[in-house]
Image (cartoon, rainbow, N blue to C red; front, side):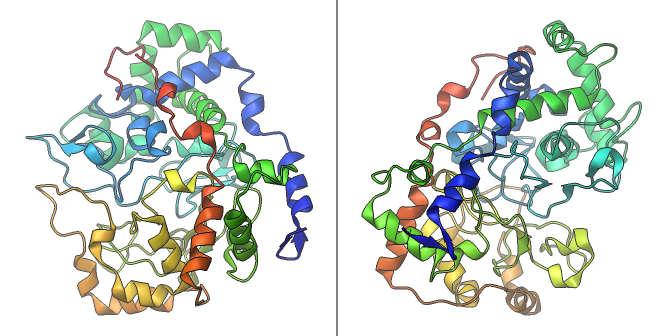
Length: 430
């Protein structure tokens, strides 16, 4: 029996199998699921009616977008083929990599986004903490439903730039909640579409539609559709000894043993849900950087604790082969490069090559790697690393890669069939 950090496989298998998945509960409400699906793929929730949730979280891109840093507003197309729109080119890349959506409906996911700025907390309004200015106005079922309140307010993601539309203007002026706020404008827009109105009423919504109703439907879809617990690894935990190759089994031993990957990537979804720094190089504009006009201090901007500088939430590794590029800013397109960075963060920070990222050129955006010239910032990033340096033979890394491949759920390898042919707004579906 293989040992996993002192616990046997049988114990981990029990942890995986005894708790009913959130998706199994939500799928029983087919009306809400179908409504959330159409809203997820419908550009009606964007300021300029040209970008949907699915644009940056597409089933064919591992519920991400295939880019290190996304092209939101001002772009056209999908994934690596997304290009800028002539005459309305993006003024900035989305500052962080689009995270994958797998298993976010499961109750153990109580913190959302790379810095955890949406979190379950009984002391907060409706039991969920939100960023300043984004407090919930009505209760929602979980942190996932709270999180989908945020992209609609971002100029680079879905709102658009001030002067382009009423949503963008409201967001720029900080009018998020209340009458005339971003949520109110979008709720009224959806409510005015007869098909949506009728379907919300069928789910039990009466009176004027609120964005919380929209968020609840989106969470029902995301938390159900992207439930992923049928990988070869899962089959192995459930007693199928033939589910893993010999290389994957060796890799699993290393992952949970000498390589110490399981220290942070623990539990049924390979995440401790905590925040750690692995000294990733800074690319792109960054977010929440109090010292510079670029960069990203990560969790410390939320916690207020300098010890959290450059720390980001441990991502789940489910379907990791499908969800690249990797890291909070997509610094590595190649998964093996990301694994090697973990083994010696300081060496790979110093040796980083910008070509490792996937960043299509944009006419109004300058170099994405200018932060490399700031030696003091790079020293701060290096000093923050809390990962132990480890040397592994190339063959050991091969085995870890084989184990990571075993976390891929076959039903998401070719997931284009999840995209609806049309949506109630009549807007085009990507």
